Picture 1 (spheres, rainbow, N blue to C red):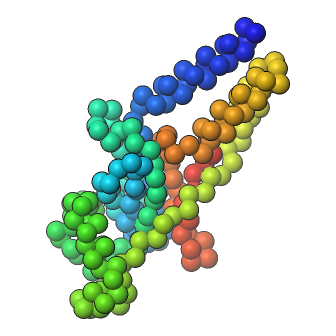
Picture 2 (picture 1 turned 90 degrees about the vertical axis):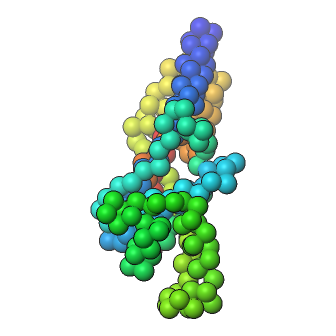
Length: 195
């Protein structure tokens, strides 16, 4: 019984500690395209964008104390940034490759997601953000650690509890993640480790 209490206490502490810290999502662009990536946080209507040039990274980071620090990841949306969009000085700072105003960019993208309005300013196609399907890749070290913890629990019940918590954490939207953006056969995919 002592080892079961120890495991439950340890898991509880790990969950509490991970929830005290703010979340950070790093976008690593391994494509040859400049992308605008948007995250939608659960239970928030605030838009957040980053511009991610090819071969570079950008992150969504809310330090502890920021009112957005504890919000969980909802959706990831993206689009390829063409030269017309990158030359919108009121929206994009080309010197730093940063989005100047998230709300204004969202409004602008929404306006020109309409094909008639896009054509009216000479665009060949509208700006339509795609919703990314975040794919979780197996993490062998994490899986081996979980397997060891299950064995150390000493009971079937303890192993089931460890497995339940491990599954919950592995694909949690409420934790920091490094996300790799990769293009395969002309399709852009978003990948992270299940850990």
